[in-house]
Amino acid sequence: MVHTGVTGGFASGLLLCLILSLVLPACSGQEAIVTTPGTPIPAAAASLPPLWTSTVPPGTLAPTTPTFTRPVPTPTPSRFHVASAAEARLAFETSSARTLNQLMGPDRTLTLSEPEPLLFASGWCAASQEILEENYKVIETRLVVSGFEIDPSYYATRDFNGTADPANPTYCRSSYVLVDSWPSGMTYLEVRHKILEPLSDGWDDYPLGVIQTPIIVYIGPE
Image 1 (cartoon, rainbow, N blue to C red):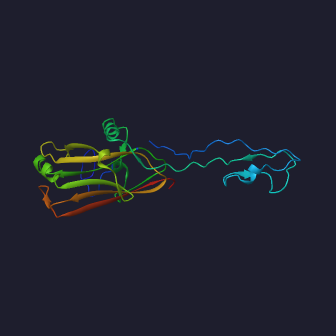
Image 2: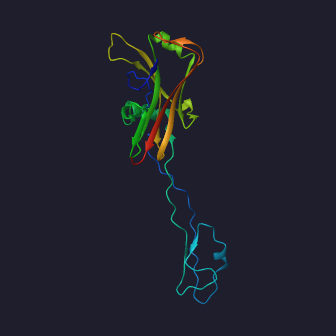
Image 3: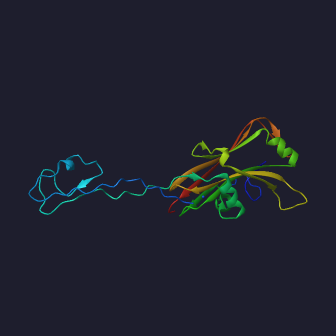
C-alpha cells in the first residue's frame, strides 16, 4: 500500500516530504574607459563585449568626459536543490521543514508566494513487518523532479506505525528528501514505486509495473 506521509496516515496520493539560494552570474570587474574631449575614442571601445554600453555615439566626440560601464547583472532565478540525507533527517527530527502533504491540496498541487525548505517523501505500508521487508526486496521507490530521478543516496528513510491505533499497527517505511531551494514558477514532481515482481502487502495484490503519482509545486504570486 502506498503511504502518503513522513509522519503517518493514508491517502491515495503521496507525501511529499528546502533553504532558498539565489544564484547570481559571476561578473569579472573591468575598469571604465574614459575619453578626453578633443581626442579620438579609444580603440578598445570599438571592441567592447556586447554587454558593454557607451555614452558616446559611434564616431563622435562627447561634450563631456564619457564613460563606458557594464550593466548591473540581473539576478537569476533560484535553482532546484536537494540537501544531503543527513540534513533531511535532521530537518525531519527537528521539525525545521514542513512536508508537502501538509500544504498541498487534494489535487496534489501546491502554490507558495515565497519558497521554503520542504520535505518531499513517499512510503509503502504492509500488514506486518515481515511482509514489509519482503515487499522491499522487489520494490524501488524513486522521487522524481522534471523527469529526472533524484539519486537514492540523498534519501533518508524511517520505519513507523502508519495508524494512530497502537493495537492495530500498520508497518510503513518512508523515503524522503529535503528540497532546500526551489526555482520560481512550476516544478513538476513525481513519486514512482517500481514493482519488480508481483507482490501482496497483506491487503491487496499488485502486478508487475510502476505506480506513479504526480505533484506540481508553483512558487510565485497567485
